[in-house]
Length: 362
Image (cartoon, rainbow, N blue to C red; front, side, top):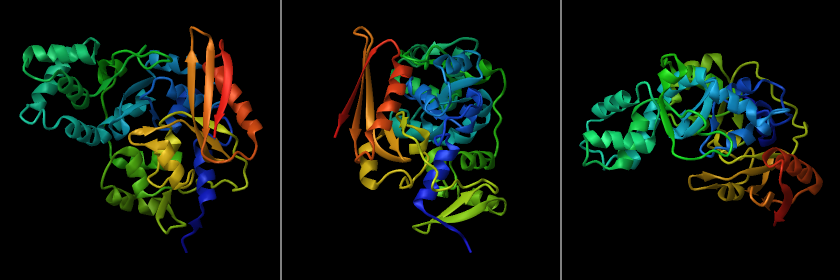
């Protein structure tokens, strides 16, 4: 008989695999690969996501991986910006290319209806060969050949059609500006390596399981994955959740004690834990989901006992040397002191040289 897992069991399993039951001492690159890929639309968020999971994490630990090319930023899962190990990028990007192109079509399909997209991709590769160009620079260079075309459609289409990475300092702590493009295979020094979805499914389950096919599809951006899961079924373990949905997991993966304490954690915007499931009831209520997941934005979340209790914002005025962390509560706190202690640690990490202020908005 298939075992039914309650929400608390699923909650603790997710926290355990996401390194959120206790901070891990594993190397940073190993942690990045454990998480498969980290959302990186906002430059500081991958740093905070790793800080909340790793013991003794320093910002230079991640910045160094970007500079030595062990890790890269690019369009990966769900057609959005992620940070992954270079080794993982080489096989994950070809797997998700269909979803990347689907996003391009949704945004620019009408404007590019009559374009030769293969020709555009070939010209973009030629322009990028041996050098790095920002998106605006690449768009203007493409417009020299196609002067009547919309610059935004040219730049974003090239980004989707060609596998590029965004070299540092772009994407490093507190560094914004125009997004630079470099050909992924040139930057990493190895060719892309297309593989079947099986490897990605197994990596996902190791990092987020037990989970459903819909959960995997939501996280990856891939569609119609039922057949792939069916092929893997003999090598996977199955469960049910309380609503009767079928969940898959890798055999031998432990389910932690439901009584295990879950410490207070500050998750960054677009965190893995929040975006990895179609059914997010294992960590929040439907009403809380509406407050955390607003349109295309996933707000930074406060976890108390493993569940969402609020959202947070951090405003750092470097000129005034003042950092203010505001927590907007979505549920009562059983004890405010652990939240204050973890907030102090976050402020010390993100704004060590500033005066710190913590505010609660109820």
